[in-house]
Image 1 (cartoon, one colour):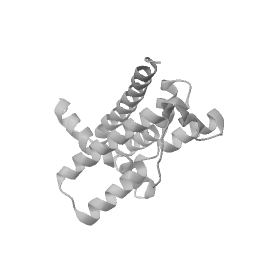
Image 2 (cartoon, rainbow, N blue to C red; image 1 turned 90 degrees about the vertical axis):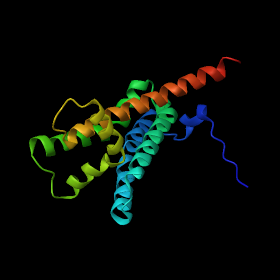
Image 3 (cartoon, helix red, strand yellow; image 1 turned 180 degrees about the vertical axis):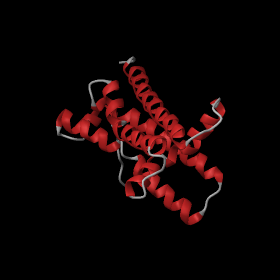
Length: 175
C-alpha cells in the first residue's frame, strides 16, 4: 500500500528551479482549461449528454480552480502576482475571442478559432446562467459570457488562496 503525503508548506520545493521556474509553472498551469475543454467537447460530441452534465462540469472545474489557488499561491511573493501569472493564458484567449466575435465578426476557420472557443467551454454553463440572472442586456453574445467566466476564474482562484491563508493561520495559532 502506497501512502502519499502532501505537505502544503513544502509545495515550494516541488521545483528546484527557483522563482523563475515557479512563475513559468503558474503560466503553464493556467493552460489547464484548454485540455479540459477539449476532453469535454469530445464527450459532448460523442455521447450527447443532457444539460445536468454542463452544471456538474462547471462546478467541478471551478472547484478544481479554487484548489489550484489554494495550492499554488505560494509560488510567488504575492497573491496578486500569482493571480496575474496563472490567468495570462485566459486573458490572452479572452482578447482573441473578443477580437474574433466583436471586431472581426466571426470566429477564425482554423485551429486557433476552435481552441479559443474550447478554452472557456468548461465554464460556459455557469457563466451564462450568471449573465442571464444579472442581465439587463437584451442581446447576449458569447464574448460577454467569456468575460463573466474570466472574472469567475479570478474570483475562485483568489478565494482558494484566501482559504489557504485562513487554513495556515488556524493551524499555526496553536503552536
